[in-house]
Length: 305
Image (cartoon, rainbow, N blue to C red):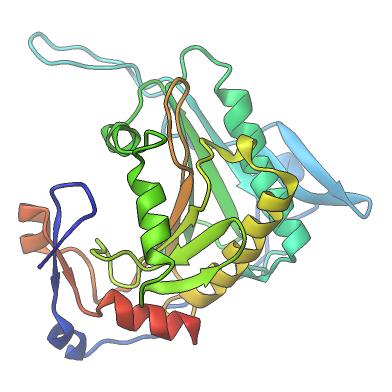
């Protein structure tokens, strides 16, 4: 068993479970016919919030999600605490090419996508009713994506989630656990990639098999605090990391973690490959323990390839 860096979460390393039979062919077919996100079909999405132009067309588009999580009916019941579900739910289409994955864009195009993340966080944070802006990507059906065209979602909610509050509690500059983790993992067998501004590694006590983190070496709160050079380094290491993760599975979830207003925080990104035969089952759900079939040291060696 391994304990998480600072949370009361424990992980079982169980390599024997990797011997279970499974079908690795989980890539879903892609068909651009009638795709809402493809060029020429812009009229099928809600009105555009922003776009990044390239070569007379667009490279990145931002618009409200047609089927938002936010905005549901607010109800109250005596004795039970409720909160508003109002907020903003947006889509960032990262490429006009229906068949291109985020891992296949150029470094310059990746910078454009990261800039879009930065700009939407900054814009949505100006809304006094927004407590946190979640930026996440579901790649592939096994990861929860409903459309094949590569895109990221941005979800602004009224409260700061408990998970983010917990991360922020351990991110105070001068006593930041992520600063310590990034420094320590840079010299561990779990290191996968690094450059001048970022470190990519498999965490010591992963909650998911083949989990990968990308952590800033400095202590930026959010993308808006990254220099142009740091943003280029982030684009570079993200391309390497996504390509490495896709050797394990074409399906993954990517979560961008930044500090809400008024907090000290250590910006980082977590990438979780989704493997059909390695879902959280009854024991994991019932106990909050994790069962990992491949030690992170082995995953790191494989991802470095």
